[in-house]
Length: 179
Ligand SMILES: [Zn+2]
Image (cartoon, rainbow, N blue to C red):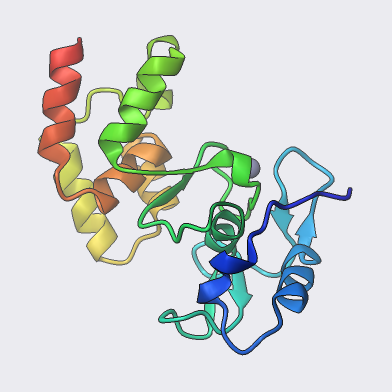
């Protein structure tokens, strides 16, 4: 599969000490485009994510592959990035989304997704403060987010939102008001 990545050279400020064309070649050659999820072919890290070795400004010698993919397409280094497909090795940028948790919720409402999914499969299912506390405890003990989700029976995206969001209170208020 030959994909055209809309890459703007002016956005390559994160990449250091490497020709951008070579960087792109090196990156996309590690991706398996045969399925709907574009899987990172190198061995995953201990949490199941792909890592890409490169000198990235302020980020040491490697970065998460899905974050690099997102950056190459958008020019934005995301503060928070989640997979809609729940596949950590996936670098299909159409399946990655960032933004504040509130943005994400509004986005789901707009697309009508929120109403169609129920129970544990709904990332916005009612989350109790008890759950939020448990998620944060497990996360600070170093347990990967996907395992936390499984252990507590909540959606992976919820865990991602809770771990990355310091204002979970706002999310709860928004949810309560919308229902
Ligand atoms: Zn995917």
